[in-house]
View 1 (cartoon, rainbow, N blue to C red):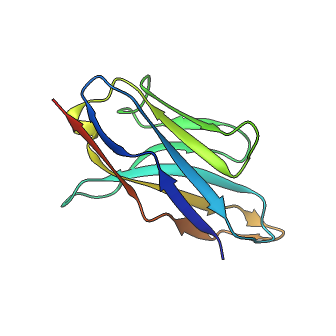
View 2 (view 1 turned 135 degrees about the vertical axis):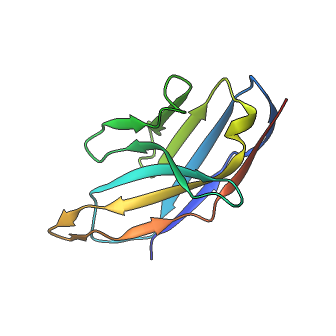
Length: 123
């Protein structure tokens, strides 16, 4: 069973930085997947923040572009980071990482979510 565990959240003042980590554990025969970060405020829909494709490509929401950076650990491919700089109060949310398996071969398009971690940015 695949599990995702977020860490690195917390409270920071506006203008500060945080680095979130998403650790992927558990075995499947599928080795082709994307990792994405989402966030959700209470009462709002979960929104996409950033994605790291299996090919190495990266995507960002307009809100994240220029301030956030997604990357994979250099020595452990099962850890993906979200570096968040110049944080704003509106970045306050629960942040989730998600694994989306590709289709084909041993991959069947399965989706896995972490439990989320709180990020609070104060003014």
